[in-house]
Length: 154
Image 1: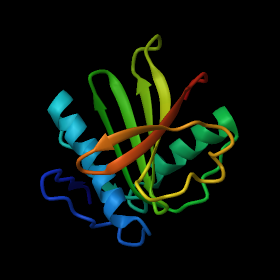
Image 2: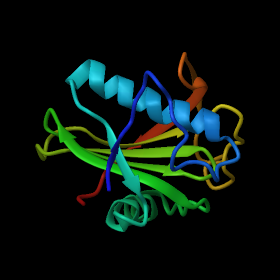
Image 3: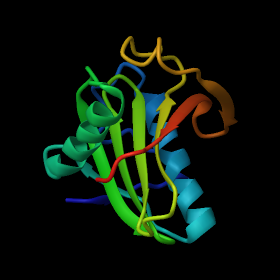
Image 4: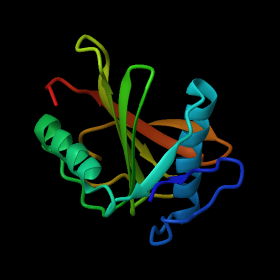
């Protein structure tokens, strides 16, 4: 069952097994605030067990595009369409968040974004392949992020 992410009263529900639970909850709330402010979209998540196809699709794109396999357990997922973009999110136990932005328009933007919760180490599967920029967030502390452009069709 999907639940709305409140970015005013940040909750750790669904993320309790993460060693950086508060930072991951802040990162998830930061995403909810972004979509609310920019698109007036209500950001919801479901458990990875409820919607395994979302985590599987993200895993497939990572493997096909960059031969990446994420070692951490997916906890929550989100999938929605806004402003001509299909968005898929996976929030992992390690504190990692991965989003796939896939334009409905074949000529549009397509990319994978990585965000690391404050206090987590860069996962070994990402460290040698990506450089991470820092961004400050009132909800999430310091977020480190990186991305790559999707070249294939999915």
